[in-house]
Length: 92
Image (cartoon, rainbow, N blue to C red; front, side):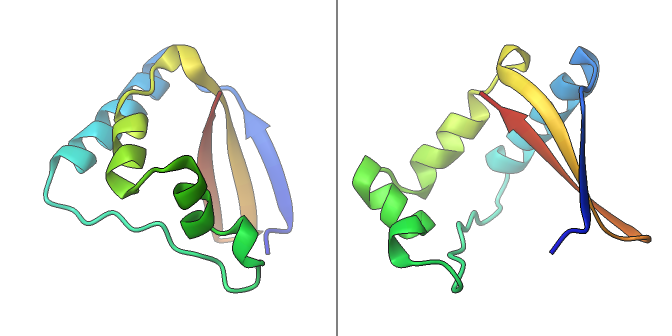
């Protein structure tokens, strides 16, 4: 569990680079998994959410590939310990 979470706004250029790298990954030969957290009830799982939306992993990939800098909201930075940070880009 992260001890502290900060947020910051990246430059448009940094977001464009992130999205470009994301598209490169998804256009490659990588496997995409949406893991379920075992500590959460089934109705809060990725599997359940996808079934309710009638989505599969490929639909999620296509949504991610279609993100634009205009939809970028912020970057969350979780400081898990003094040697490790976890970065999450948030889109609307």
